[in-house]
Image (cartoon, rainbow, N blue to C red; front, side, top):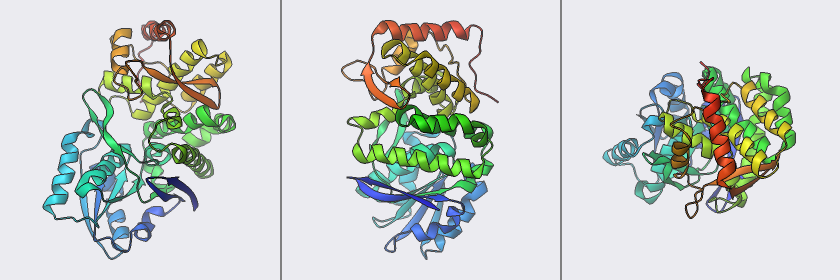
Length: 370
């Protein structure tokens, strides 16, 4: 078992990574917790719900299993309301513990419920997808989607811990593995060129869920994110670089309809577009653009974006991005591999990237892999 510590003004907590962490969940329950609400979805509940419930019950606390619909399309105020209604109807109190067992959707919505229920109760992250293990479970971003855009309603609210069981990844569909690997290589792009090169060398091992490769990739990703979050918890500056590829990626998700592409697939493709934009605006070498494209393809994510309804719709969707300032879309760009910056860009280069996307889509469907 490896441990990575996260230290922020909003709370310090451990990320524990290793085999069998699911069966040790009782050890993570605070002694003064009154009751536990285990929030998950039907798919995860079928695989791991009873195991997680038994492990949590080892703490001596009463555990209530609460299932909500699966998928990004259900990351809504209606689902949040259902969680809150259940907690209130069953008279959960301020000393309760919410446990998020699932992927990014479950983690985000459970964390947001914890942030606002009775003005804040404790919650524990138990991520079951690779994407959630290396990204969304770490750092305290919680929230739900809105018809105007992704994650526009939420709060920064830190968990009391993150329990990462690498064994859980064995039941993931291949698309989910690829989607998670997109967030892994993101850290190499923005923070650690040596880690990016390591990912290039071990892409096949990572897709095959090689235990040693996975353990290293997850731990290194968490270390890098913890460093950034510790310096900038509320994304007032440096933390924004963690959104590399996300401005384009969120536009793909919203334009196609949430859930059509997995979040990581959209981010992977968005990183290719952001690399192209970086080449045009801040000097990212062409060979670095091609390395990013090749690695995104190697992990199984699409590298050709859908055309949507042309450049105008792309811009309209990206105007809803949280990094927009005074009406200007701000992108995470790479002057070089391993270093990132956030800035607005001239319209010309952006239109060039979007026009290229439309032209390439004429001969490529831009669909995610089966």
